[in-house]
Length: 113
Length: 114
Image (cartoon, rainbow over all chains, first blue to last red; front, side):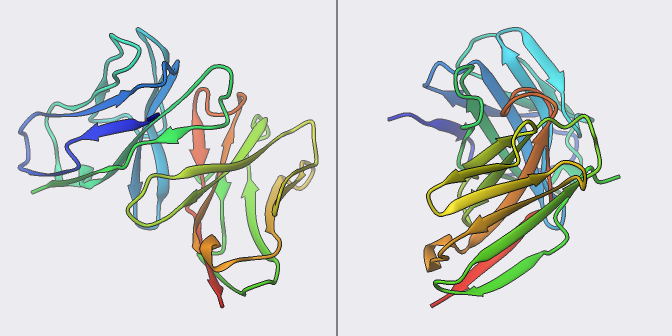
């Protein structure tokens, strides 16, 4: 089954404790992105990647890092999480042939205390 | 500064009627526009897109209209069905589809009443 998986789905952590949210897709997609969704702000792009080893900043990259060492994986790293990074995070992927159809993961709800 | 604006946070429509969701943008570099639908506890799903070289794109019950001079687009759903109740996001990009930097509006919550 074609899908984008994220782990963990829920996470409660404390300020300053490094964490990684994993994202994996099994569709051999070139493009992958990370978004955060906050009430009243909609979806905002954090980082995107157009292929392996090619990443770029979206609208709200501060406090986040990403890497794209393999095509299928695009982890989101919070080196020193802060409470303002409490949010619902979505990973997404799409293929070069059909960039319109972005497949989203189920979301990761992160709470930073 | 919001580059993509959805000024109506919510919209309520009767089943069978037309739903019209609006979106305005400010950046003239945007060349490609997409609509996504999102149910609670799920990721968004792609609905329909339009390139700036067109002024209309239709897919079944969904039609997107683009007015470049007014920097305005709208999504029409005809006829509306209760299953269409969701949050709808408008998104814009300077590149085709979801390549590169994609800017989303804040969303409009559509409620279709039986």
